[in-house]
Each structure stands twice: as structure tokens, then as C-alpha cells.
Figure 1 (cartoon, rainbow, N blue to C red):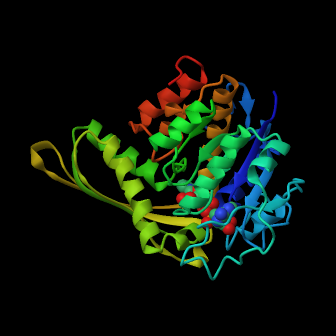
Figure 2: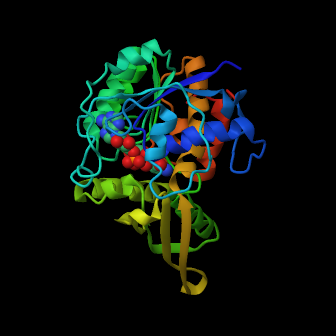
Figure 3: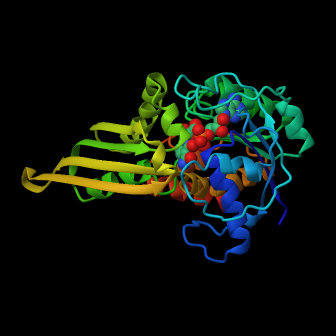
Length: 354
Ligand SMILES: NC(=O)c1ccc[n+]([C@@H]2O[C@H](COP(=O)([O-])OP(=O)(O)OC[C@H]3O[C@@H](n4cnc5c(N)ncnc54)[C@H](O)[C@@H]3O)[C@@H](O)[C@H]2O)c1
């Protein structure tokens, strides 16, 4: 199969998961956690990273395989030794990439910013993954403009509105370039698990009244979202995706409450549900989940990358509803998990193009 050339803006936690996964599945036959070993004929090993952008002085100028080690923080690598990728991390446009909370921990590179569109063209990139921090809205727009200029598809991992913003959707449609987003939904992350439990209860006739899913994490993104505005924004996105997938109104709180560096890549989530069921009897659920962010996000990315390449091959442009609904939290159209999965599979099997 022809390779899928991917560029990534933001060499953080999510990029780390992707880089590790691409090497892991080159030499491992074990497919636990892989939802689709093949998507439209594409295997995970067909994904090839050709360019990477960051602004952190410790990452810019390094080979991507070395730069992602800086993002590891306190976690043990899932892949012991990463092979050199021959991809140098380049200095991207800074814009609002650094928040009040991260200004003391991200040393800004003094190198000159590159022309992102030019690099995308030179490296023959098919797809640009935008993985800059939550709230770096201007940076997201700058990368999206560069992708439009270079005729490159976009996966917007961040919560900044792109796929769900009608004006951006129109720009991509007019340029005949596919786009999917917004805010990548981790495979077994807090939002999916929360939605799954609420779905199961609702299916059984239980009426959920109040619920929260709150977590603490050790990654840089956890620190970034301690910024009051950025946290409120991310919470709004997470809460909205749950409310909109439910058939009745309920009170929802969802998001990160604190950052503890010693947790590294780990996220510890608490789920609490208060509901009523048969004869108005009360029901309460109290759960705790511990997961790792980078493999969780990368597991979704490998599906989204292959699916958007299929869109690109068939010149299906603008925001791709099916990929967005299945792989992202703040999709233009939000439906139940099972419906989203069906749309996604129908799309990949070329039965429907929505
Ligand atoms: N599982 C996941 O990792 C996951 C899940 C859901 C959503 N997301 C979203 O994906 C995005 C990335 O998450 P992450 O955990 O990798 O974050 P991170 O904080 O670990 O990494 C972000 C990286 O972007 C870099 N950066 C900042 N400004 C930049 C700019 N202007 N240009 C290029 N690089 C820049 C930072 O230096 C850092 O290396 C966030 O918006 C987050 O909300 C991630």
C-alpha cells in the first residue's frame, strides 16, 4: 500500500503516543487495542511522519524520535528504544501557544519560524495533525491556513473550532480538502467511558439526573488547562459532547481539575452518577479509572489518519461528518457512540460519503 505522509504541529504527549505506536506496530503482531488492523487497505505501518513543528527550545532542531522523549515526563516509555526518524522538529509559528500556566516550563526556541506551507509541500505531506495546546486558537488557525495553502488535509486534535466552524468548513470545502475535528476523543478516555455508561443506563430505562467525570493528570496539557479560561473552554467542549449525545436533559460536569507532575502521562478519572429507575428507586455509581493519555489519543489518531486519507483519495472535501463524529469530541454532528461507529465504518467501506 502507498504510504500516508503525515505532519504534526505540536510535539507533545499526543505526538509521543503516535511516534511510539508507529514503531511498536512495525515489529509487534499483537493487535490488542487496535480497533482496525486494516482501514480501506491501510495498515498502521503505512503511516509515515514526514514533518514536525514545535516551539520548545528542547525539541526544535532535534530528530522527532529524541524530541518526543522530552514530552515523556515521568512516564516509562512503551517503546524502549526509538529509531531515528530522520525528521527534524522545526520551529513553527508561536502565536498563543504558551499559556500563563506553561510560560515557565516551555523554553521558547529562538530559532526563526519556518514557512509551514512550504515545508508541507516540500515533504509531500498528505495530512497535518494540529496538536498544539488547548486554547492556542491563533496557532491552530495559522496551521490551518498553511494546510489550505499546501493542499493538505487536516485533523484538528485541539478543541479550537475548525471542523465545527462553518466559515472554516466552507474554506476547506471550496479548496476541495478534507478536514476532521475537533478535539480528539481518546479511545478509552474519560469522555468515551462516561458516554458508554450513560448510554447503557439510558438503554435500560434508567434516567440519569446528575453526573460528573473529573480527573487529575500529570501531562503538560493538564498544566495548561489550569489556566482558568482554557480550563473553562475545554470543560465546555467535554460537557457539550455528553449532553448532545443524550436523549434527555441532565446536569453534567466534566474536565480536568488539577495537575500533578508526578503522575506523568497518567490520568486518574472519577465518575459519579446519580439516577432514578424503576418505581423511582435511586441509583448511584461511583467509579475510578486510571489510564495513560498518549496511547489513548494515538489509538484514535491511527484510525483518523487512515480514514481521512481515504477521503483525500476520493476527493471528498470539507468537514467529514463520519470521521469527526467517531474520532472527535466536538464534531460538527454529535451522535451516540454506536451510531458514530456505524457512520465511520460505512464511510471507510465507501457505502456512504457524508
Ligand atoms: N490523549 C491526548 O493526548 C488528547 C486527547 C484529547 C485532546 N487532546 C488535544 O490535543 C492537543 C495536544 O495535546 P497534548 O497532550 O499532546 O499536549 P502537550 O501539551 O503535551 O503538547 C503540546 C505541544 O505543542 C507545543 N506547542 C505549543 N505552541 C505551539 C505552536 N504554536 N506550534 C507548534 N507547537 C506548539 C508545545 O511545546 C508542546 O510540545 C491539545 O489541544 C489537547 O486538548 C489530546
